[in-house]
Length: 145
Figure 1 (tube, helix red, strand yellow):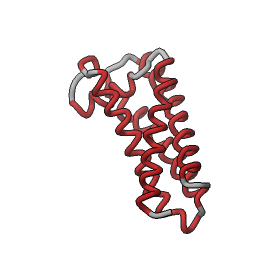
Figure 2 (tube, helix red, strand yellow):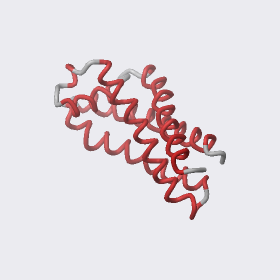
Figure 3 (cartoon, rainbow, N blue to C red):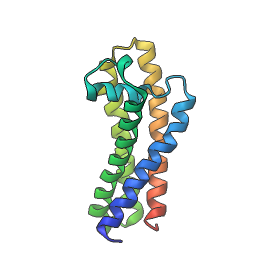
Figure 4 (cartoon, one colour):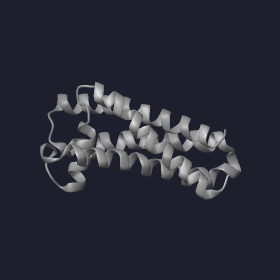
């Protein structure tokens, strides 16, 4: 598959992952709090002042950019590892990285008490795993693996 096609497939897989990730986020008590926290950091505003639209834009754009990053990794790794490993390995690393970046760098700056921070982190972890699974599955399918 051509480089451009790989990048498009993986970017679409990232967006699909973010869209499917909306389901557990909508069902869990902290909902889109992680997206609001991320948007608040980008806007340099308190979490309470972030609009739902801004949180949604940041959330879905981040999913798309994550997929694009996966695409770059696939282009670099596929000749050496084959499609399956070139998708699964970086998608796993990306998922773990995103979980930890949010949980240990971004979330602690939100000003939440310990209980809310822990609840948000646990729910974020679950939602991020959903993203990673969908990202991987859609990318593998789209790349014909």
